[in-house]
Image 1: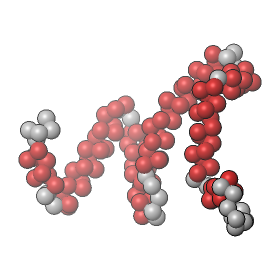
Image 2: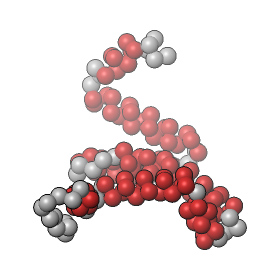
Image 3: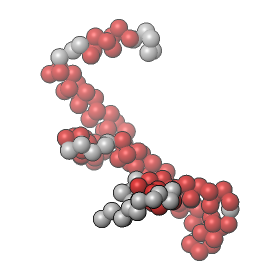
Length: 139
């Protein structure tokens, strides 16, 4: 369908925004309602649309929010499944998690990635490189 419809899609882009934006909004509302036949889904769609608009206006990235919304249900279901498989004991769950070398490696990678996002990272990097100049921690 992609290659056969390319001329039609190219013409759609040339369509005036006054026609294109209401059409996209209408299709979005119909699609949100059609999933569960519930008006609350339309409210959720409009709410996330407004949130996305303000995030764009104030310079925040929208991608992580979309990823979080999509993956949150999957993460919650698998977290519950993992805890239930260990007879609802967090201690047993974490002891098995930390016993595996693969899990420890992945946990260490997560910690490094999270530390790489903080302002503390340049200070830690300089500290481990044993530079002659001493840097003070930020903050």
